[in-house]
Image (spheres, rainbow, N blue to C red):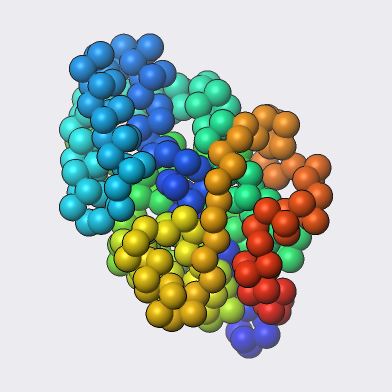
Length: 266
């Protein structure tokens, strides 16, 4: 395939890049309501969420969060989890979506780019969120299932270097031109993901990623409007609503990010 025939993709991390919290921990309340976790687990999840929000997501913190989530999920009925996520998705996740991220996803799609949501969170959460946002593809972690129940172990952990490997696999399978593609993340742990494309962008970056972005001339965006997407993301459509004006999106995202986008070629 000629390079001119290859497609451009935009890869988005999920937690603290597209939504304001950890997607997995955001479902603690509906899991509690359905009897999957007890009040103590809810409190632990709330504390883990607090740490996730106020500290940089370094490797140790991400590992702590992973251990908490996998231990919490051990023994759960996988089908019940999928049902709860689908039934509560709009109430739980809609208010967490960064309006700027939704606008940027829409912008990429208007440019003819494939949009990929790539996250260390479980695919049971990430795939429905991706459908809600109208993205083209999703890559996420896979929890091991035996006899219909989670074992508390991971078959695939979509984190760190594994994200970059998944992106390379997608480029091979789907014909993506990675040097012409985009990637967005908030965390230094996603440096392999960001470095895999020609247009890396730091979003609400932690201290280490902000420093790296500054040293390498990467654009830095600030997303700070985690408002309800209820009026923007239709319940019945898999496409991001077209109601938001492109001018408003450009103003929200800032000229820095759009200079990079306007420099792309289909």
